[in-house]
Image 1 (spheres, rainbow, N blue to C red):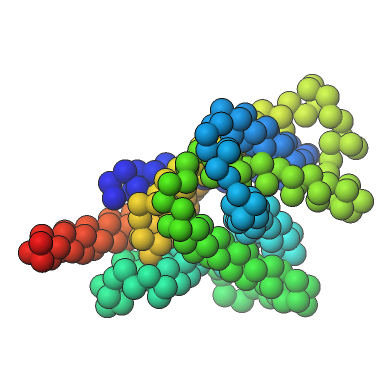
Image 2 (cartoon, rainbow, N blue to C red):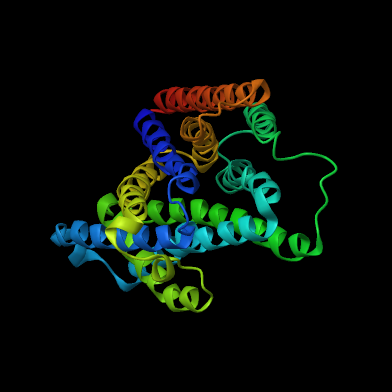
Length: 318
């Protein structure tokens, strides 16, 4: 469990780099960055898998189909849903819904695994929910009007993103549990390769819709340097290392605990985003981040106590 917790925290730290992206790519679009990120990730995944000859020979078509579906749920499909929600719902609805991902995953994971009695799960969940509300206080303002486009397009996309990542977390944990001898690097590599292929399939659609700016703004190093640099950084840190760390965490932690650790991505993201903008969070947002950390600490403590009791009971039975 300690190594699983460290892996989950490291994954959220890597993923939080995504919060910096809008401030560093200039006039280029998030789709330009995603294209480079998924392409570089797929290349790295191919090299990593090629170096695992023994694991590669043991892979089945079912393994490839499973990781391809996981790559769509947790990365490509999730990215498209989040981006669509942000474009159509703006900076208000999308973050408010996405902040519910850890809560929904924790509830769904505990319902499926029954890893913790519901009353003991309620306290850390309540603290985390309060923290999320405070962190997003500036985004959730009463009185803001939503037009028909937001209601018809933005909200369904935001809900789809929440459901997509929830399904990914549950399915990934179950798939790994069914494959106890699966090499974590090979599993990560297959998801990276699948994500790159899927993004490549989306490329003609994106070009037709005018979503990519590399063609119109210039694809040379002088013009698109920031896109190339940050695309590579996110590919290595967020995709490769982050996906591998989450795979390790999924093997070692109950879904209900791993989901709570995801909220640390919000904490890291707020800090990184504030550093880039040179605009630090106010008192309410700061208190919210503190509550998120406290909620995570309580959750870890609750699961540790359960683990210790389970080991003691097992020892008595023996």
